[in-house]
Amino acid sequence: MRKAKLILDKDYVISDVDKRIYGSFVEHLGRCVYTGIYEPGHPTADASGFRGDVLELVKKLNVPIVRYPGGNYVSGFRWEDAIGPKENRPRRLDLAWKTTDPNEVGIHEFCDWAKKAGSDVMYAVNLGTRGPAEAQALVEYANHKSGSYWSDLRIKNGAKDPFSIKLFCLGNEMDGPWQMGSKTAFEYGRAANEAAKMMKWTDDSIEVVACGSSSSTMPTFGEWEYTMLTECYNNVDYVSLHRYYGNPHNDTPDFLASTMDLDDFIRTVASICDAVKGKKRSKKRVNLSLDEWNVWYHSHQQDVDLHKREPWGTALPLLEDVYNFEDALLVGLMLITILKNADRVKVACLAQLVNVIAPIMTRKGGGAWAQTIYWPLLQASALGRGKSLLPIMESEKTDTRHYTDVPFVDAAAVLAEDGSVTIFAVNRDLEEAAELTADLRSFGKFKTASHSVLHHDNMKAVNTEADPDQVKPADVPIDWKDGKIILPAASWNVIRLVK
Ligand code: AHR
Image 1 (cartoon, rainbow, N blue to C red):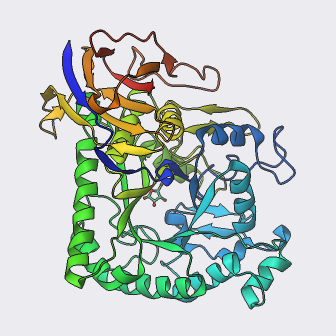
Image 2 (tube, rainbow, N blue to C red):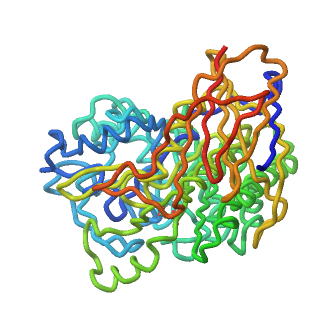
């Protein structure tokens, strides 16, 4: 039996949890929009063509914010193509994903859908093939009340009230050579600064996210953040981080240790933001937007083959990772890492929402179901709101192929407004259960309301349309003995404590 000890104190608070850390992402990519959230003619579709079954699954996730419309897609996107009567909208080649987009869904349709889902929109502007002028026009179209060219066009197109979008991404992964219109850090920093200024002059209530590195593995990582922030620090509010992990060598202990890297990545970018703050003698703090994160590797080869077979198709099944149980554990660990960095990570978007590396899958004309990774996100989004407590954790440790001193047990804890505390804990050990001792010193008497466990004996178990409940959390009997509770081997645990 592994041993771990967790000390929580209600006065040891990392930060309020920004609910936007439970965000997601919808890109015009593969079947995320077309036959994902939108499928006119589907038996559950509403009058606007949005699938009711998908919407129900999204609502249960309680997604506070959805990033849209890309991703790599946005770097060639002309947002004006996707407004006005649908029959007049052009079909455009999307060079990012080598597909054709019919532009049937644009800002009007997506904002309507987001409202139904109870989500705010985080809108990415194109700073790849376009620039500050088009970004400014978009903000005027979306947020200006009336009496100007773009705002009056929005009204003419059917939206009397502004969309009131509050958060914008200044492009996407502009450091990546795969990006249309990719830039050097200096070029991007200048463009982002000018776009941010003009967007904020149009609506001073908005916040903007500057593109950080596409991953901590980029050769320019670090230098990119420092250089581009030097150009735009005063006009931006967040820096983005993107991070995906995979287990291509089937080394599960190493895979589950990947959050050591995520934690380093977050802390390094925060430090660079603060270095630029110091250099500029600024009082403002730039925080972080982890606006793409997930497991992504299962579909890589499939996508290469698909493109060879069907170049330029529409609604191609791209990036359709089928997630297994161990992926859900890593997603749980990534959520724990985000919560433990709640003082700096204010926005995080699981990439993506439907079909494309997604917690929700659909079949065209058929059903919709929850993948394994849906469950930790749902539970964290439901119970992880309030104050992120500093988890002082002692756990036995191990080394893996890429990481040293990996704790077997990792945990985060959130104190909710109603005084309840939820502990999210993963036991990474694949063989042995862990005995977790919780020392809740300043909390006084607590009773355990529930202990939910996500576990499967087969690390590779998946959910499918025919068998959607293979991997799903279940409540287990509450079994504290002398302040100790058992976390089964290879498990995600949600322990809810109430007064
Ligand atoms: O989420 C899939 C893709 O991953 C996004 O389009 C891009 O930003 C990233 O490389």
